[in-house]
Length: 399
Ligand SMILES: Cc1ncc(COP(=O)(O)O)c(C=O)c1O
Image 1 (tube, rainbow, N blue to C red):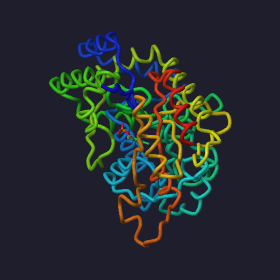
Image 2 (tube, protein in one colour):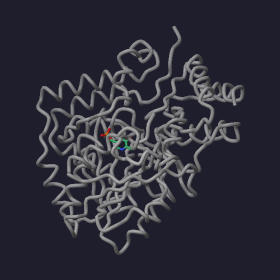
Image 3 (cartoon, rainbow, N blue to C red):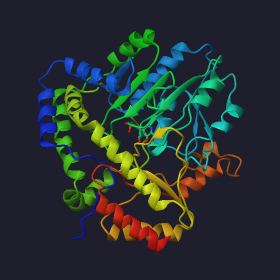
Image 4 (cartoon, rainbow, N blue to C red):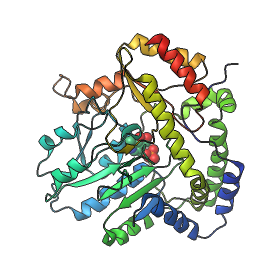
């Protein structure tokens, strides 16, 4: 049997599961304690937890609707290549997505094209730090200064990335992260919200307080899922479980999201995971740097531009492979050596949802190209020097 290294995930240790289980019997203070730890980690004053990044984003929209100057402000500007699930909270709050192409150099939102989309209906611009790569935020903050437009940073896949020592997601007035499986750190699921105006704390508390809390039996099932996830991200069990695990990967389109409160058990798990956060972050940074070296200046392969002053905790290491046959060959060869890769969303938002693409011509060609040519190499903490040396060998042979 060819043992495969999973594309994502940090295996939980026995102690993580033990403390998580104890969390079930602790008071709500455990969530407060986790908040305190993360306030220190992100260096922020305001933080809250919910069940997912999607719900975090949803709550932020509720707050922005309360804060907006005019009811006509309904437009949310976001890149045409990103997680399709981001459209769900926009839709749920009766808002309207407005797409902008990506920058082929950074693989992120093309910030120079945002200005042309701003108008009296714009409620927010959402720089999304895809794959862990910091999206430029300062120019968007300058562009929207003295306007009624808000900036929300989506750091769902970029927890741990910093620019000039400051965590991404904390530059703009609002930011959020995901603790879902497959993200940089995971408590099975979860969403973190950060904001910079302390006067909004009561509003966040009110909206989060209105969410239902998971009943005891669902929390028990959640604990079983912790164990399952822990097994699913270990090479041997991942290989055995592959036919089942494949079904839970983010390849299918989500049409619905549930919102509920973060659980004490997840907070207790998070507290234990944060004891080794420096190691987990550092591995993603180091593996990413090594992959940059491996893929740079290779024929027909493009690597992303790394913003000045940034430390990138890659969620996945992205490259564009121009020749699709070569991409298939790389995927196949890496799989034979025991490393599984992904291509993530095969289509940009405007091709998944035809209402964005009425004119027929491709309005966001860079996003389409990225979606069709992307290859993602996992950089998580289980990826060791030996695996990276094999990647280097395969890439040197094929590119
Ligand atoms: C960029 C981005 N934003 C938001 C989300 C939503 O996060 P969650 O899965 O925790 O709801 C995801 C999830 O894949 C994502 O990749």
